[in-house]
View 1 (tube, rainbow, N blue to C red):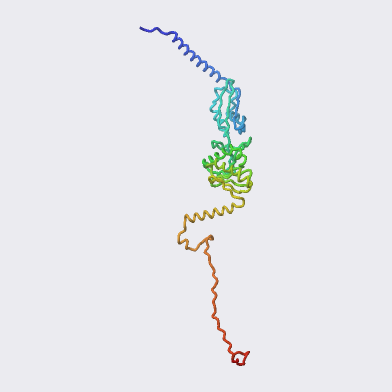
View 2: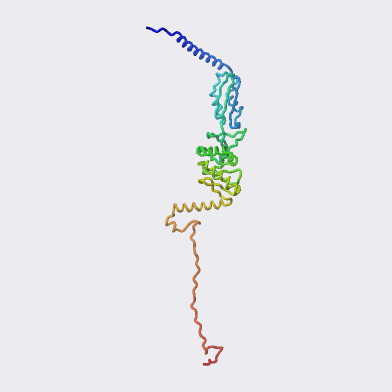
Length: 326
């Protein structure tokens, strides 16, 4: 026996379906109506670090107007994704997002890149670096107060390892209020080691590479609090924090002697590791380091045979011709 149809249930489902269809139609109609409307204006919001903006609203507007002004154009004719990519061509723009609000205003949100260091190349060129290792051009609007690195070698291929070390050191210095004020610049040596130049104190701080950098800075801070304050700021010419659990300080005026001693020690080690062959040892030296010494000896004096003096007999004594009495 067939069960009677539940017309109430069927009617309820039908109402829900019709309601859904109606909502879709209304949404499509409103969207189509909105797309036919014109862009009334553009609102630009730029977020930066401590409001130090390297790009302003005029720069963004110039980028948006590359292919003509968007104001007054139908919303449907504007490709927002294309506009976002156009704005992101500026090196200082990290991210750009756009949408139209209910008042037909184009809302533009810009996230600016954060410079972490300023670098000087060996050819004199200068750039900023951000945390993503993006090279940023200098700005005539503002100068960022970030750690300065000099001596970056000019190469066809960027040394990514060196750049990452620069970013690591710059991050640490930037968040440490003491070293941010104390470190004037950081030089990179030809062997890609770091040397810190302080603001207060006339010395060089040999930092080495960026490995174990937190402990190196902690050792340096401890040295400032103890030995340096006791002995004076200009007592040491060189500070070396590359050694484990210690800071090596070279007093002013003794660095040349220290360097000569180090060179002599290195020479001794090389001789011990690579002893010369026997024939080279016996051969006459050709350099001025080891010269064969000639020892001059005094001549042995010759002793002539002494003559025995003749005895003066009484008869031969001219002073006394008289015979002696017996």
